[in-house]
Amino acid sequence: MARADQKFGWLELRPGGLYCAPADIYIDPGRGVPNAIITHGHADHARPGHGKVLATPETLAIMGVRYPADTPETQGLAYGERITIGGVNIWLAPAGHVLGSAQVALEYGGERIVVSGDYKRRPDPTAAAFEVIKCDLFITEATFALPVFRHPPAEQEVQKLLTSIAQFPEQAHVLGVYGLGKCQRMLSLVREAGFEEPIFLHGALIKLTELYQGFGFDFGDVRPVAGTDKAELATALIFAPPSAIQDKWSRRFQNPRTAVASGWMRVRARARQRGAELPLVISDHADWDELLMTCKETGAEEVWITHGREDALAHALIAAGQRARPLRLAGREEEAA
Image (cartoon, rainbow, N blue to C red; front, side, top):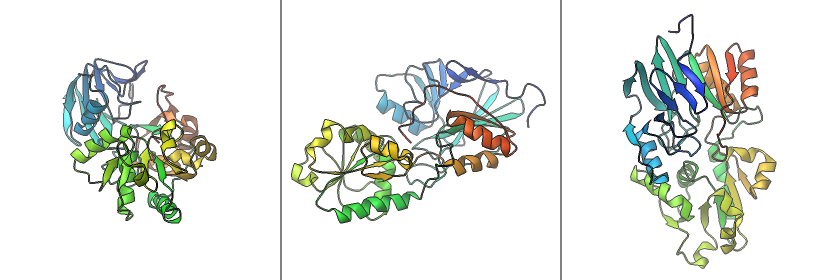
């Protein structure tokens, strides 16, 4: 599939990010550009100010909620649907990260490049499962690319939360979750585990949860914190952005039990920093073993590594016989992990 000369030279690293020259289009650019492909709706990948945006319909809907004043020309591309721009064959495949998240597959001059975006390999009732695409060059994230990061089963961590609720029924439980993806995944996982009581949401979580509901997801009895009687909240399960746990907003609850769901809860210092009495190691990214497995499964002769622990992953891949190099892209955040 790959040529012997000038391999992958049609995909460049520019100040704005990854740029596909024949198609004149950027992938997840860090600033406004004329043409952009967006892998998913998190703000460090989906920024406003582009002239044209290509993404899954779900990601476009998410961007519409997050950036209502932004009015780019948009084109929705369903998973597996192919288009050709400037001679480049382009399609999107599920990344398993959040609703609408996609890998970007590019074919040109006999080469195939796949840009992973953020991805996870674990089952998620709110996101289409990751699909492995055979390719010549795989561009992977590396958020949790250290051997210490081996995520436990999400169901095991959810059970810790439900056990705490059963042990401390007189206390409210405030769970810190990122607004896009983690909130809705946790709603689904808690319901699947048998929790049937109302779940109350911080105002910042409501619009995106309603968007998920508009796409057909059923989260049971979900209510806003605003306008709810304090007595009802005193023993309730409440979801809020992690920042709200340490904010004056949380003072309305008397002696709550605080939890945070994130891959970073594996690190005790991060759990203390977030004020998490109950750290839940639940990540929306691939862990160390899954990163290595995915890079191998693609069959890529070369791997480029974006944001995260790039050097550690590059070293491990090279030791396993794959060519690899870090890209050191700036502007990626870790809080949605």
